[in-house]
Length: 274
Image (tube, rainbow, N blue to C red):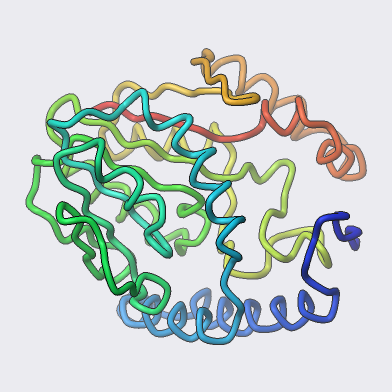
């Protein structure tokens, strides 16, 4: 399989191939590492990745942050403690800062997060990829955007449990991640049928809901978003859609990427409530 580059894609096929080669090389070291090794490797490998692969353009980052804020604003207020896990360049955390009491950005890499200035109520915390080094039961909102797919499957449940532990009673974890059923979503999409790069595991909504409930989230909500409008949708509807898509032939599932409505229906935007 090989997808054509979008008309507005400013990356050449040769650059994508090099990006893909680097991701496979580094991701395979994570996939095969023992648990204690992974604690060190998340930081080492992501630092190396950000040094070897060009960063996103500022305008692309701005648009992405704007789309995320369209959804996040409904949950924010000045009395809240907010944590972003996997903040990357921290652009979103900086934008969130004026809307909340304090922002903590938890990441495995210092490379992409370095900046000469930041909001006064912002703090960067370096993690080992599983731990959330904050005091328990104090955080009101934890947010991650395209993070879960980057965590080793054996570490994902550990990190999720740690997220649950730092939340106040009634606190929420907002998780946005791509759906395996219309993937892959990393750079693999240009070359392969499954994610082989830094998306160590892509999930379905059903799989993630099960993980949420395993660590203690009794209430889990799903949201759909289209053109800046976000509405809660019963989980059973999404699970029925996923059930239908999962039994469709791969060629049919690949075709789903072309249809925006199906991409929206399969997009994972979960809110777990403690």
